[in-house]
Image 1: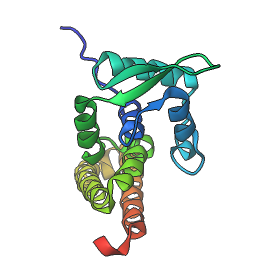
Image 2: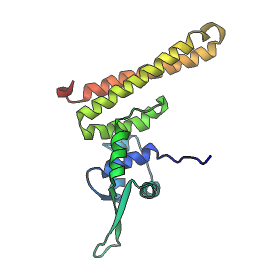
Image 3: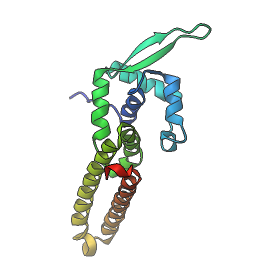
Image 4: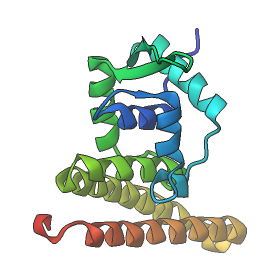
Length: 183
């Protein structure tokens, strides 16, 4: 069976930069590298960015036009397609499905969810909180029988439980930072 090549969260995040207006690759890279935004958690080389943008174009999420400049070389302008716009909207509202993806993927989703509006950000937090609670419940059920028979396995589960509890506390902090009007 052929491997399905699904876009990565990095690629979906790039769609978020194009949501408001077309941009050229260097401009996207500047926004992505901004130390007051996603640059705090994501680092992407310009060559990687262009490769991802090319992939998004091949898969129909963006289109390009060439913008000619007087004294400079022409540059590619990237613009969202309707498919890209819909994909981004679905992506930004969906919680991550694994705890290890919270640090990068959720951070990107939350960054763009806030731009979409406090209601979108709050909905994302709520959905992620539900997913975290499911993970927590599952780990707690798995951990207890291990306490006496396999103490090391129990300790690993307790560590993971502590991580998820920290994630839930952090999600509470995210919600507290949203504008008070939507609580």
